[in-house]
Image (tube, rainbow, N blue to C red; front, side, top):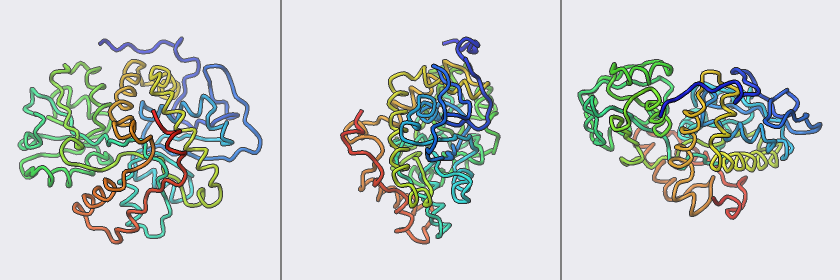
Amino acid sequence: MPIASPSRSLMPCRRGFGQLAMGGLAACFAGGRVARAEGNTAVRFALDRRFDALAAPFLTAQDKGYFGAEGLDVVIEPGNGARAMLQRLASGTQDAGFGDINALIRFRDENPSSDLTAVMIVHDRPGFALIGRKSRGITTAPTSLEGRKLGTASIDASFAQWPLFKSLNKIDDSKTRIETIGVPVREPMLASGEIDALFAFGSSTAVSLRARGVPGDDIVLMEMAEHGLLLYGSAVIVSGKLIASKPDAVRGLVRAVMRGIRDAAVNPGAGAQLVLRRNESAQLEVERDKLAAVIERNVLTPYVRAHGLGGIDSERWGQALGQLASAGAFRDKVRAGDAFTDAYLPPASERMF
């Protein structure tokens, strides 16, 4: 499918990577401006990434006034990896954020005084994956990575799970060559054949590669969840200070994000347009298809459709902690395992899709 750059007519207000506040910070909306409500709780929200399809549910909650309806003034800021996002929350620079829950588990274990907590699982199925090309000798068998050149960004969450993935699948990594490369050049390098596979968020990156002209039947998506990983993916994470001082704000934040996800699932094209307002390099059809793929593959899993969005299965959670411990022992496994709480989720009946 050819990918065309979106026209200005699709973008009544296109913005850069600056701060985007709900309400009176001059945010642009499809239907006009919304005035900042006096007395609302200010929440500084940090992403672990730039503004892209994965951020669309949060942008939807912002631009459609769902945060405001919960009495919140939310500023959403882009980021550069889960670790940096967690440090911003821990320092008090931000109040809440979105990122890899496994990074949070490790962060809590390494920082005993940290009170950061995940309050909502967004990616029930993690996006951790390697994506390769059949023409470069990659198959769905993990051992096909042996003898190949793999590219990764230093901040990539998928690469963080490489020790566990290679152990589970008996990969001899002495036979692989891993090259650290920048995020902007990962996909072009795979498309041009400079690397054989890359670590990335699987479902969305596969869409991007097709947009770059890589034939769909040449793309091999090796999702780690298909090869033994039981881990959860990204979550809404909040500071202990926000929980202690504004517990109702945390509940409202979760409800608003839930509404944003529901809208993004129904109309990914509308969610993609909100990305374009903030990211001038984004392309409408690419972001739309990425969002639809992530919603289908990573968010609305069979478990979520049966039990509701946002929570965890206690048995799987325990198994996931065991897998993480096998890749690197915890200082305090109990504390690490307390990284999630369901205390701020709506009733299950309100979380069904």
